[in-house]
Structures are given as structure tokens and as C-alpha cells.
Image 1: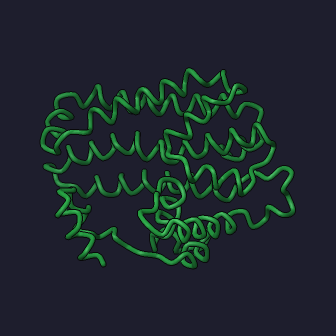
Image 2 (image 1 turned 120 degrees about the horizontal axis):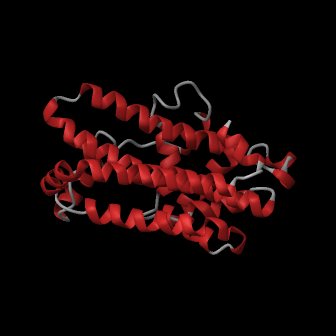
Length: 250
């Protein structure tokens, strides 16, 4: 199957998979649900696989099976929902999302420490992308969940199932549709604008990207910190005096 996937993307002139297909792993839904909270969840890469399935995946085929898998993963995270349906805070999922973000950050630091000098520029570009794409993947979900809890005083399995059907940018757009959140609409619009700028800058061939980043690295990295500052502002304003926000932070 891996060989067929590699052949297919080459026929379609899609860039090769990273690390010679190293990340073309496969997992059963039982592996995803049974590994929740286990000591080897991160080491076996089930944490990353499960959360990326949950936060930014789309089925190419087998839509019904995909929906059932998402439901099973939700059920594992919402195992205590029955006793707390009127005021359920998705602490389990929020903590895993934060753990995924921290894992991305730690893995980046570990890799760059070992990189030779000629790889440093590529490492900095990965950091630049981490502070946009990966941050958006994780924190758009936290903003969405916090927004739902603010409106409903609970987060049901149906709420989170809807979240999995939205792209990270669509989760931000959902916040713009809520009249109760006008106080963060300015921050959300700026996040979307800055993310669009990031996509435009990085959607060029690798050699051109390396050269452009080398020439503008300071300005580009300042922009990535601005993006993070906006994400923080939106989260803090949305979560003001909210118990779920307190749980996310501490």
C-alpha cells in the first residue's frame, strides 16, 4: 500500500512524502482509543496520529467508516459526559491538544540541536511554519471549544463532531459568525489575514523559499511572533472569567 501511494503521488507530480515515507504509518481505531493517557502514547506516535485525525483530516474514501472512527475517538474523550452533560468541559481533549502543541515544539528543538550548519535555514523555516500552521491547527480547536462552552455552558459530542468537520480557518470563521464574540472579531480577522500572508510567502519552490527566508528571516520571524500574540489575545479575551479557560491555562 505504501509503495502504491508513493507511485501515485509521483504520477500526479505531487512532492514526495517527507522522510522517504517514514510517516506513512497506519493505526487502528482501537490503538487510538486504548492509548489515551498511556505512557507510550507519544512514543508510539498515536498521540499525533489521533489528534491530526481529529483536528485536520479529511477522508479520501470510506466516508461512513471515517465518521464512525471519529465517533469512537469522541466517545473515548467524552467518557464522563453522561454524568456531567449540563456543564461538560472537554478537559481530556484540551489537555491532549496542548500536549500535541508542546510535543511539536519540543521535537523541533531536539531536531535543530542536531542539525548541521547547512540545514539551519531549513530548520528555521520549519519553525516559521510551526508557529503558523501547527499553532493554528491546535489553537483554532481550543478557541472553538472555548467558544462553544461560553455559549452553551457545555460541550456535547455533537458540538465536537461539528468541529472535526471544519478546517482550522473555518473554526475561526465560525467565531466571526457569533454575535456574542464581537470583542474578538478584530483579532480573528487579523489572524486570518496574517495566515493568508504566510501561505502566500511559503507557496513557492523550496529553493526560492530558502533564499527568500534567508533574505527576510528577521521580519518573517517577527511576523510569526505577531501571529502568536494575536492567538493569545483572542484566547484570553474569549476566556475572560471562564472556568474552562482557567483549566486550559492551569
